[in-house]
Length: 246
Image (cartoon, rainbow, N blue to C red):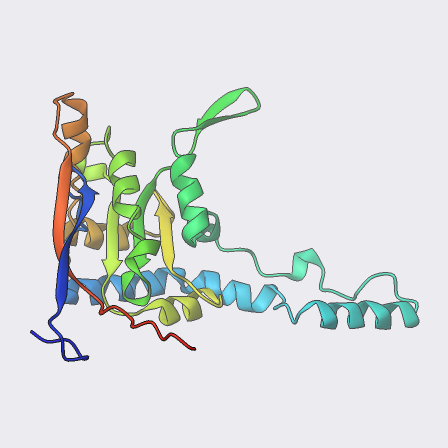
């Protein structure tokens, strides 16, 4: 094989470390099941988005906010006229049982085993029952940690109650964004025993298997595993010729 400059292509062997443990994979879900799950998910999230659009004022930026405050000051208004709290629509019960976004869901997993005390009564945080990720809209670097977190959080749970991880292979971020009334949505997590989620949970539980993380069991076995060195052959670009000026 010749290079673009006409000379032979030079090759070399590149070495890097690999994991001695079994690689964790995403649960396999048929495209038909993904479409059905997405339909039920959008139907479940719809009331949250409608409430957000009616009651939450969309930010128009800092400049618009400063202009509004100046106008209020000029008109000697101490408060901005707003509807009374009693006139506002009631916030959907599901809003407090749904987490949206990379950071919120990651913190939810981190705090899943924490306990809080309310009036002397110890309350354990709710686990996630379902985690939905828009894999078709983002690089694997942004969601590769989800299988590990889901598997670790369900390690001491019966398989029928384990958290299900649903990765949508088709781009669906824009559809979830419109359902929730947000600019961008990459992941959605629903807590266990969330109100009105029975139909969605039944479909997900039937269509999606729990995440299998074999390396967690392999690590507990305390068996020595040799370092895995992966060797790959790659081509080397042609050397640049130095131009010597007199």
